[in-house]
Length: 222
Image (tube, rainbow, N blue to C red; front, side, top):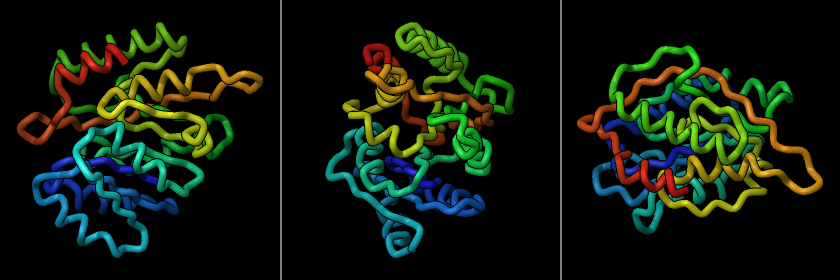
């Protein structure tokens, strides 16, 4: 398993995220991508650089989540690649649940859905409305029946990512990767996509949440 974790100004959470990822009993590498942070994140990463299970990638300038993920994917060596935001909104202990459909040979891609029956922190109503609208629009274009297109927890067999050219630099990564997974490949079967329920402990803006209305509009156009 390659865990690719993009982050910007996550000094407060990064060490704990790495600890929780390491605690998952699955052979893995952790790829941390720093999107040119301006707080103490750089110092935390320097302390992890020499660890055998960690690879640190530094972006030369702040470009956004999509650009950071592209950089991380280039370094991924695992059979399965998982996206982990560098905060504590998503729980790494759920990795076994997320990768199980791929391990069993039933899926090529797995999305962890916050809306199909697990615990979640009660927060912003309009965020949930926005998520559902964007998921609906995505489904209209892709003919998938996802419940949570905007989820962070996306898991791929590595060959899926190797066949996709990504362009979006910011949070447009979510609709872009979804559309390109859904696109039919000439002469080849479609990728098999599964959803599995996950828990969710969303952050407030005071706790460091960064996505906003501008990103929702950008995702709409993507």
